[in-house]
Image (tube, rainbow, N blue to C red; front, side, top):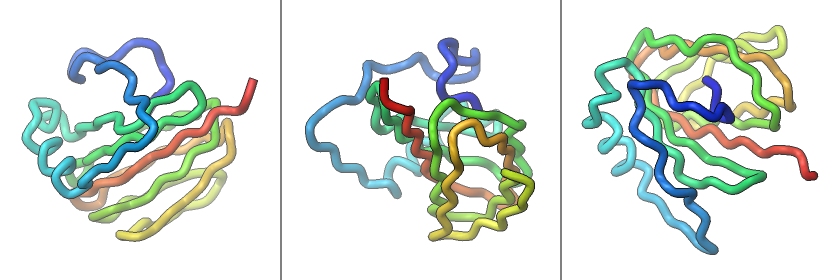
Length: 131
């Protein structure tokens, strides 16, 4: 899942303007429901950037059961917080069995891949190093 690439795959919605306000609030349950009704859901995966700054990004992602996200690395540190479902995450030579409420943090450059064992929703937060 390359979140810092410049080009969006064709099956994703066009990028919105950066979400950069002093204070933001989200109803994650409603956001997950919206993502399940988007055309991208037909691909097995739908995502929405909730917060976007030069040094920080928060993305909400929903996956259908048995959907895999191929190995990726990011330039920043990341955290993955499972909201619902069940995901198997492979990272840093370990296998993480994520259930609702699980949070895993990975250092920058850590290779990782995942598979949704059942329909799942998670937040991924990416923090890039300072200048």
